[in-house]
Image 1 (cartoon, rainbow, N blue to C red):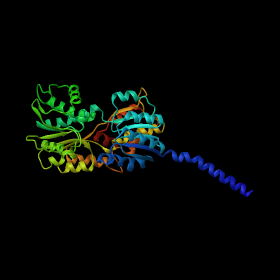
Image 2 (image 1 turned 30 degrees about the vertical axis):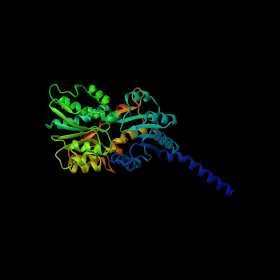
Image 3 (image 1 turned 90 degrees about the vertical axis):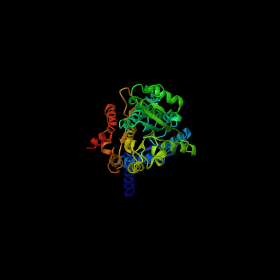
Image 4 (image 1 turned 45 degrees about the vertical axis):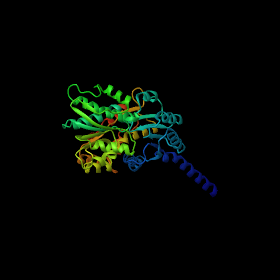
Length: 395
């Protein structure tokens, strides 16, 4: 009898333990992260926010891919996530986004785009996919505006002679083309009566011309002048020679870059009077460049900008996807922070890099995690991405 009671007691304990297991595991979610860059300062800042803050705050586990350069690599990485029981994928890799979406939807796991967007055509194709969460990042119109504002900043100071680094313009990379077009349009708008770039003065015409030629032509734009231009990422002696020549061009006052400004031109402008402006990110290296006077203007992604896409993905995993009135996936614009001096940069970075209370803290994100949060409220939240607006949310 005693043995029977003991067996019954053990069985009851086992049943209670098994009954509790789903509840104990429910809070722990695995999310795969596709990487296009595994070592850059921006990529490391994004990863630190997810691993050092978000993972602890929300009891999630992030599994990272290796640095991906091919569509096959992306497919293999997603296969690995599926084998490891990931419930969702957040992608920073864009070799073949349509294939990524198709693969995740077929496997029944959620997929989201971080710091980027789909093209209009891609969004129309995938917006109704059950497992496509959506994308949060700079739209092409925001990319255009970030270039426009950069050029306007210097023109409004009275500068008239410029250089430009076009980054991936020769490879027809959309965001770089739109940033460069924005710079040129600012010159057209502020270059006086009759100002035009290569005979055209409308944004769509300028954008189309850059796509067609894959380059930027130098010359006068009204009373302004683009004295020098370098594009591509050749990294050979001839390419570095062109960069050095541009930095040393007589009369040049500022060099506008669509990205990588410090990396490709920092050593050439150091100690000179030439102003260097770039689109980049808020990282320690960028802060050092501003403190030393190498960089004068940075429009940067902030590391915690990936907080909203995480919470949207977690909501979907928990059975509460955020969809618009038509039931479609997210397609939300999120722009840049702009710093024009070292003190401003330090202020922004101090908030963004905090491991205890980052810009997008758990307190802020939790307001958009409850079941039934509306698309309108979430969209309005994402739209409040400026430094001042986020600081206001934290109060």
